[in-house]
Image 1 (cartoon, helix red, strand yellow):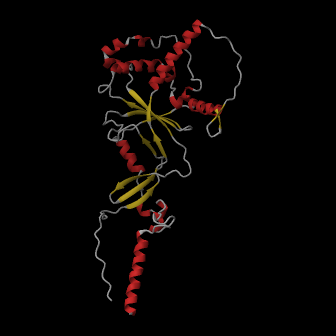
Image 2 (cartoon, rainbow, N blue to C red; image 1 turned 45 degrees about the horizontal axis):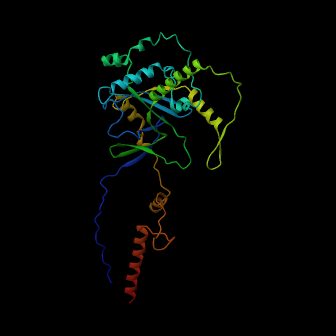
Image 3 (tube, rainbow, N blue to C red; image 1 turned 60 degrees about the horizontal axis):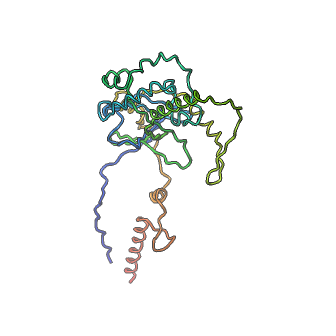
Amino acid sequence: MARKKAPKVSLEDPVIRQYKIYLNRPRNRLMVFQYPNRDSVQPYSAANGQQPSEIRVKPKHGLVEVDVSINVHANFDKAKGIQYGKVMRKNEILREGGSYGMAGGLGLVGLPRPPREDGQVFRRDQLSEATLLQDFEDANNKGHVMNKITLGGQIAPPQSGDPVYFIGVFRGDELHLNKVDVIVQLRPQFHHLDALHDQEKSLSRAQRELENPPPESEARAVNMTVKSSDSDEFDVNEMTRTLKGMQEEPWQHLKWVDQEDEHSYRVFDEQLFLKDTGEAQTLVSSMTNEQYLDAISAPRVDPTRQGSKVMTRPDRDSEQSSSEDSDVSNDKDH
């Protein structure tokens, strides 16, 4: 009995283009910034009116901060901008290059304060907010307005089992993959509110001490531990030492280059593409297509038979083909 030819099946999702894939190793570490609170159609760039002006890094503790300029002429509360601008200018911690938040020890360790000055330095800040508001442009140009926001995040140390990410760039029929070394999620930091609260607290404490001077007390060392719900003890002193180390590590200041800058395009071409593709070694997979699908997929279980593995399409096709061949052979025998 002649075997019927299988009808041609049209592909619902045909292959329209193929690419050669190359693995590249950039000379420098590849760091990806993510902005969970920012829409992807509003990038921090010069074209969007919000170009980052500076990036600061504490490499030992993995802390990152980015200053982003604010457009003070659109959707901006000028009175609040002046109020917070004065707070930021007068704050001793920020003026000396310090910080709040995690980089400043979360306020749990003593915030370092420089020696008090004679008050001459900030005499120009005695202008009232109403006066500054009358000539807002001049106040902004002279630094009396908070015209930037700070984004902050921490580099998480790699852990076993973490996913591996690549950045892919196309060039003609080539796809060049670059391994990502670090991913940092940057969120808005509210240093201006911390500075305002710190100044109000300092004024209140000074007033209290003036009215009721505190008695001298003997210093004693105290070792504190906190017991969590799972009965594991947490050393508060160790946490304090870690936060103090974060606070004391100096910032490394870097310049931010806009994504549309000529230098950015030059670095893009130099770093993210494999130079000599002709000398690239060919990678040979040690897995079959079926093994690869099994490795990246969840376990496949037959819902009608608990614990029974569901065969993939190639296995079913192979089984069906073997069955048809057996039927043809039996017909010939008869």
